[in-house]
Image (cartoon, rainbow, N blue to C red; front, side, top):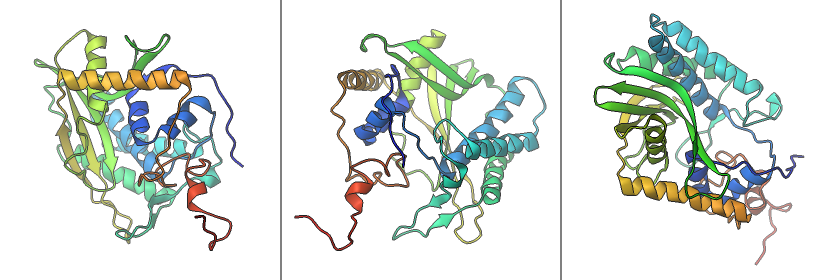
Length: 307
């Protein structure tokens, strides 16, 4: 039986917390008010492995070392394997790990993976990025890789700070470029990464504050996996999507974080979103223990109904 234990509030806001609250405020309650063991899954950790492989490649470049694609692949697979054993998001036994890469829907078949299959997918993704001329031109200097920021949060309730980790920071004569590496099962839809998503605005403003600059751009680098359900082989497709943000969009994003911090200080209310398609065991780490998740979807008697 998974239980939750009340914990002290962590007064640090990030774009991922804001984004998650937009999906379901109940998840915010679990994150901030309960020490809740949660289980990630193979899709999440494939992304972790891909990130680690990319990070190794840009660290080689930052340190002036020759590019070694095999070391990049090794770093990615190692990160994946460590994540299966234990990571900060799961804290559950390895035999409870979720190996479903793609849940069965009326449009798509169920795809389950094994450790060796996942290793192979990570290798395909990392090699696709570096072997297909996707890395940034050498004229861009690598400033930082996996860089964490911890900054004051003016206007937020007392004691709150803001932060987050940027995958890659580059610079040239025109200023800085912040990069976020993404994996997705399929190609991103056109509206994905729009200004309603807080990430770009959040990091643009954070880096401007950190580096005392105004010249900051943001881009998503998305690697669509396109996994064949029969062969379990990927057909990687890379896209670089710029995400410009104006001052009004940046202010609106920071205000959303302040409002959320105030709600957390008040202790709620944290309304659930059970009608969202993301209210699912495949997307929500807390679904099995949430009274608005599995409880609303299953009964002891299949014939039972309430009116």
